[in-house]
Image (cartoon, rainbow, N blue to C red; front, side, top):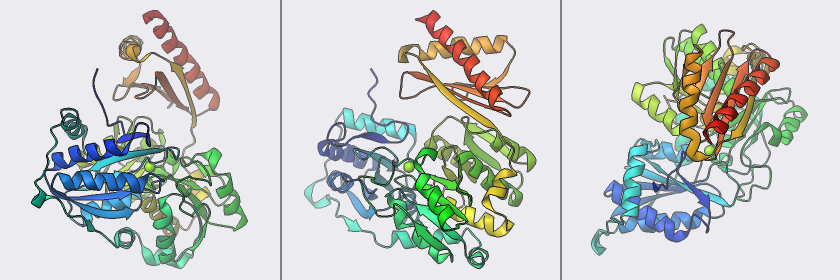
Length: 457
Ligand code: MG
């Protein structure tokens, strides 16, 4: 049995059940041993357990001779930017992103602020399990230092990537919903500096997330939509708990899913930078491809997961990446998801085009998306996928196998059939020009996978 600590997005668990203070000290010792000294940023999100875990991480890092650089509470992208901006050797972020309040997690950053690679995570896991923890002698123990002002530095950096004067002239009215998370620390200040009239809901920081669930999903954003309409705002935006994802609501109070806003940003970016590469997971909408084809860009598909997108961007030198869940990676700022940066880009687009958000979104090609899942025991997943790929190959279908299997049909529709990385299920994402076609695709492929699972059981 392979021993793993890191999942697709760092280490996650329920505080004091999976993720204890003792564990936090030991994993920090392993992380410090991996870094072999140096200045390591420690920062955290607004969860009730975050300050305690941060103290444990600071102790663990210091014991290995690393100097913990205490950044306090801030959005994950702000902490990532601080690592790069202050030329630190790495970072540890205490966050469970959008998970419920009882969860917390630990994310490790390299010296550019991007999450470390899977190979580096394995190194840390080996140090942890084999207890090869480096213990510095008393005179070499790391002495913590505090970092102040990172929020102002981060907001200033974002302003360098947009047309501040053009945005200011528009005097936009914007409703922000940080979901009681850390976007409260960055987005309202930045937007006021950009001349916006800012309205906020759920902007009191509270690790119990009393306002709405921490994940911005259409069904959680009713209050935001109502306030956008009530105050006649130009748009609204909701963030997840650690402010790396953002979901937008147009001036009519309608929620738009992340791949649509990403397509707008992609279009704006490719108009200015024709021929550039756009990195996105295979689960993204065909919109990303349509926009790239129209403006001469090239789409590079990846496996599902934000860290994969960041690393692919670094590897091929791409400047823009995006996920359907509202994660936009703007490389000129930093190749990681960043909700506040994304908000500034949307303001920039509205200022430059002089159009309403709903109009811009309605100009995009329209697709219907259907999602579903079927059960499949973990030990069968690989065999099921092999058999399925053989079947679709025999049918002569056009497909790719970056993550599961994504089949492209000649009418422009597609289906992604993908084993979940965490649960004993297969997931289906179909996309088509009509709802019936998307529904039929999901039904058809669910049947195919269920049949294979039954045969192999
Ligand atoms: Mg997040």
